[in-house]
Image (cartoon, rainbow, N blue to C red; front, side, top):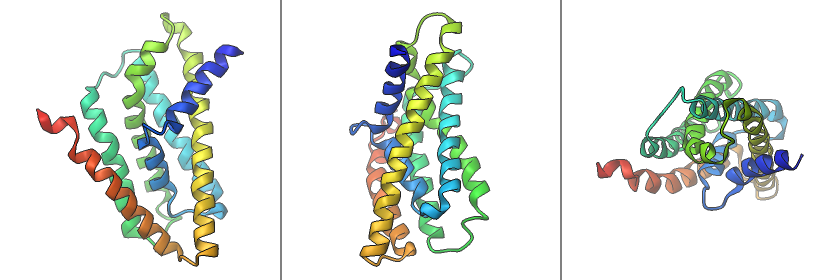
Length: 197
C-alpha cells in the first residue's frame, strides 16, 4: 500500500507542482467555458486527458515511442495556446455541446503530448522489469486524475464566484481567462529551446 501512495503522490505532485504550471494552465484553458452543470462533459474531458497522458507513458516506458524532449517541451505550450485560442473565438457561443466531440478528440491527443513530456523522468523512477511497470503507471495515473479533479473544481468554483458575485457574463469570463492564458503561454513558446537549433 505504501508503494501505491508513493506513485499516487508523484502523480498528484506532477500536476500540482507550482514550478511546472503548464499542466494547470492546460486544465484551466480546457474548462474555461464550462460550469458545474456541465460536470459530465468536464469529467469526460479530464479523463480523456488522463487516458492520453497514461497511454503516452505506456508507449514511452515500453520503448514503443521515443521523442526528443525539446520538441515535447515546445509542443506542450502549443497545446495550451491552441485550447485557449479555440475558447477565445468560441466564447459565448451556444454550440458548446456540439463541439464537445472535437474538443474530446483534441484533449486526448494533447494528453498524449503532455504524457510524453513527463516520460523521461518517469522512466528513471520505475522498477527495472517490464512486468513491474504497469501497476506503478496506473497508480501514477490515479494521482494525476485526482490532482486534475482538484484543479478543475477550483477553476469551476472561481468561475462560479466571478459570474455570480461579480456579475461577469460567461462570455466575458471566457474571453478574459483565454487572453490571460495566452499571455502566460506565449513567452513559454518564444523562449523555447527549439528556436536555438
